[in-house]
Length: 361
Image (cartoon, rainbow, N blue to C red):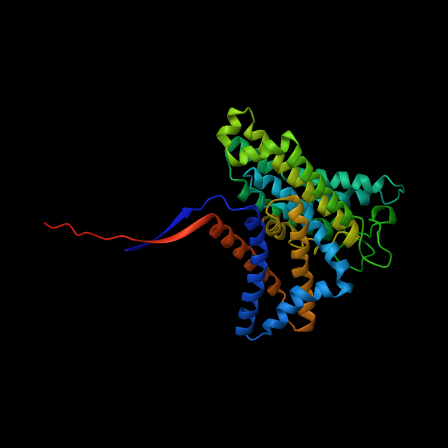
């Protein structure tokens, strides 16, 4: 009887660890071209429009910058938790709550003006995302409830709350019946940093967040604590680190950063709150975090790579009539190949033959 056995390889080199995400993207493009050709679409055209056009077309660079910003911010927050083996899957809900909290401040300050309004919205949004991570942290530390389930289920609660507010009490009375809030004022909107483009202040904020987290994770006691708790919980206890405290810090930090992304999207891209505000950034950022090897600087490049796929998917829908679900398929394949490459880098698959000896009476 033949069996498959996984044997741990020697510790892979840093070059190999950072090369596998590139190979995962290339494998995604190759397999995607074959799959879409087999089901009747222009496979090579799909790969060209999704992975090449957004890079070679200068008119799409601003779209790449704007779409990568929330992915980078959310993924950096998730990476902190994942380093500590805290699996926050509900960043989408925390992103929504951040946008809702910022919108609430915008509606309350509609008749006011001043440079203090936008910072107040940012603080409110981060607190909103943080608050949405409190329940998973509480249930995990007090009752040992898996944070994967609780954080994920709260996402759907956040979506329903959003729909209730924009259809009900926050609905714009001058919006011709559309479920949306009033437009934000100039003091409630992120400024554009490049004239005649859609590149707003959220783009450099995303880079700054990644750099700050990189410094904190590599040069602070908090970063060391997160890594030790994730890699060796028993050693962390022996060293005096509180695992429960680390769980709280990881979840609240990732929630606050997801809320920050929600603020930047609400005040930068949308300019109001609408039912289409949930854009799956919270779920896509999970792929970005792993594609960037849970390293903040790597996440910047991974966020740009994922933005290429998102923008390219929009282009392919227009040029070659590729279905909208194609982008999700490419993202899923990318995650699959990344996980598969991780497995093959760290483990060796061996086929083991086992003889079955029948007992004689």
